[in-house]
Image (cartoon, rainbow, N blue to C red):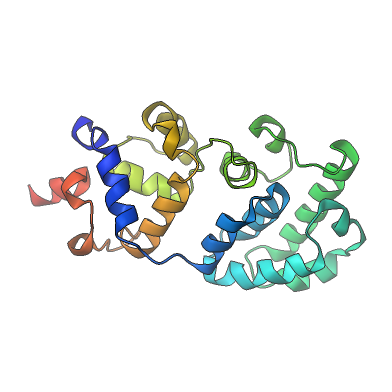
Length: 217
């Protein structure tokens, strides 16, 4: 594992220099710099691929871009707008409930801490960290399935769940990478280091990958 972690700068540089294409949803989240938009769009993305989430997010944002906007949106209208994301009815209710809570409890402003964000029903550390990083531009490590998978494949961590991966990456990664590590590894995971049949022959960091080295043995 040490061999891989010692080359963090090279690994990240090689991935970025590969200029891998980003999905429209990833590009949108990068451009927001708005905690509420990041929060509600991240909720839509859970258990749904980016290709489906992107148009649903655009339709949702036509209904509102601030918590107060959703106080006058009924559940059926929002559910229709975000269909066919996974669990769209539950997510519509969740977004309306969170919007109301932000208005009533936080004076219309998304709370600026992971501890407060995870108090919202259905919001875990992945979503909270993404809001901190992409919404508030504060150093935070958002660990989704791509970040979890790739960090383990590289040998950066030896963990079984994303929350464990986050805590280990907090010890390992220099803070200069915290804001962007999710975008970097998600893009890499969508294009090269896929869940099934990773494209190791085209991988720009295979020389630093523990899993690839073990395959050769």
